[in-house]
Amino acid sequence: MDTRDLSGQTIYRAGRGIEETARELGVDPAELIKLSSNENALGPSPKAVDAIREHAETLHSYPKASHADLGDALAERWDVDPAQIWLANGGDGAMDYLARAMLEPGDAVLVPDPDFTYHAMSVRYHHGEVHTYPLAEDDGFAQSPDRVLAAYDGERMVYLTSPHNPTGSTVSLDEIEAIAERTGEETLVVVDEAYGEFNDAPSAVELLENRDDVAVVRTFSKAYGLAGLRLGYAITPRAWADAYDRINTPFAASEIACRAGLAALEDDEHVEAITDLVEWSREYYHDELDAKTYESGGNFVLVAVGDASRVAQESKERGVIVRDCSSFGLPEHIRVTCGTREETKRAVETINEVC
Ligand code: PMP
Image 1 (spheres, helix red, strand yellow):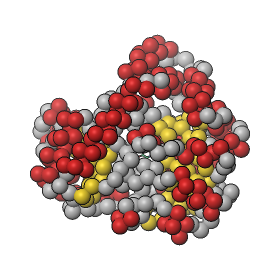
Image 2: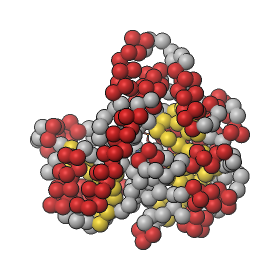
Image 3: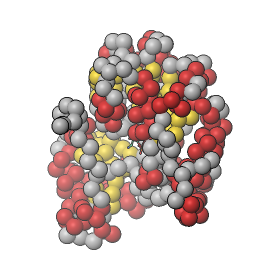
Image 4: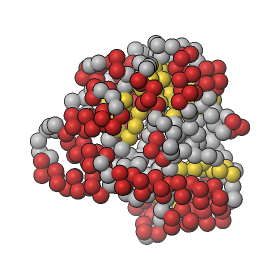
């Protein structure tokens, strides 16, 4: 017996931990800085850590009200109905739920190229077909209506990412609305806002007031610093009523994750500290890197370095781990996460030296 034909599916391998990289280089992990996964430079919200400690003793029992409590808190924050909040195992899990709710085998989904890999993976896992619209460097990797609609051919879902990973480009509400208008009611426009907290642009959730063909994906992994907990959610159309109850996995998010999420959601101070730091770090990269950088609305910056694989390797040997964007189809670019002030300065020094 074998699995179904998975030969076309991308193989996902988690990035190597800092300890493993340190072993490979024969150095102390403390000498390395990891700026390759867009993690929160200030760590998790301390309030979330307290909540986890406080509830650790209840781990033997199945989740209780915390799932509903977090859904209610998010519904209040976004001014939507609690049924519109689909909690999941990270933003990735939220994408899976959307695909589960939307796709029949063979349905097509339009995603940008380059793109965060999981959009396409999730579509394939759900027996869908991936179509792409190209992003171009000469217009700042914009996901403009022109670009999207030139490729659009009646796909069941269209992915926009704002800010876009790995380029950092953003999409305005007017642009999203223009795209949704043209793709019509049978196509769901999914706006992935995993990095939404790192800029002042309004969320596409606003569009859900008047539209039932837009959904938004958000996560606790970035601004809230809870990537290890795997907690994210989709905000879905009001018209979908009980769809979540019909497709979700029982206990879609763990008790501990929901408790921590609730605490983190109330920790405005932590979110403000990281967003201020990111703003500073982004500017520092733009001002101080010799290589070309691109405007970014996220906690990372794309840098044109020529030979990305060499620059990433040599930076790593000097203790600074950055993302070689070859796997995104950008072999001349690296992506560097906004670190602490000290990390950011060291990254600039190292990248300039290596380039
Ligand atoms: N969307 C984008 C654009 C991302 O870059 C990421 C993670 N790097 C995610 C979604 C998923 O994040 P998570 O599953 O950790 O919530």
